[in-house]
Image (cartoon, rainbow, N blue to C red; front, side, top):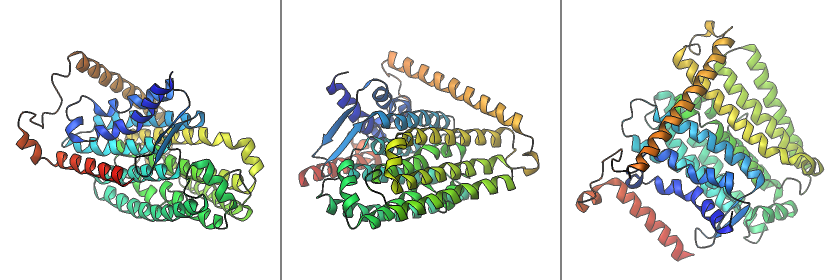
Length: 428
């Protein structure tokens, strides 16, 4: 594939969901959640390794697609497809365009963070992803979902403050060149490296809910299954991915910090394992599995920081590990939601023992239902394309009367975003 088409796909994978997030656009299109995934899917399957720089946007932004990044990108596409199918099935579907806006904003932030080639881009899109995901957690949620949202937003604010300070340290050490390779080399030699590493590690531990910062993650598992399916691929997997991209792994040995990370990772695995065997339940199995997966990854990061030679030899396994962990955790959450809804074994502790057969059957039934719903939705999408989209799903906008358009909140948000982009372009 030519470099021009690859650049277009790279651009579209990030900004196409952001464009569709505007209610004035996605309310006129059929199945906008599925349409938003098409550029990313084409990018991961067809495009070559390519990089794209946008110097006029937010003081310079960069995106790149590489062989290692494809693992995480493909995992995210699969999980976002499942989440789109489950949200479409959610009843009742009042104000569906509000949920779609939050969904697409979170998706755009996730794609931008995965494809980012510098610290500023990753920080910006991960922030967008985090706050949009907070909206998904609390929109229409009960008291448990609102509590999970409060705990998550507190962790998110603290993490972003720490990352912003780390970003300033990296800019000072690298002479404002914040490409990942340049920052890794500069921070491995900078006197402020221990402070930078500590803030980055703590920040992404908060974002991913790594032990001992698991309070918000445990509460989020109590939210609706239709939304909690994204927990494995949005905050958890992207928190691990951000730590992997920000840390100067393999550049220099940080013995003390590396050993501390290994100890924390091992303690997380032991804590989750002991609690899992002490109280057997399907619900706790999902939470403890997330703690074990993140604890193992933290131990891996500690080994890479303490022993650069080990990272050079085995560091390439980190990206597939994130992809497999995110996909596995998301599927566990989906199946647990199916068990809770269809069999009720999560709410009855006495029925949780000996439910392996029911658990496996729920796995198979859930996968079959998701595939059937996805194929049906794509069939409807194809029919809409053949009809020229003559019958849009939502007729909330009267295109013939401009006075009604100017009264809507969606056009005000659109004008505000466009004004912000214009001012950013003029300032740069």
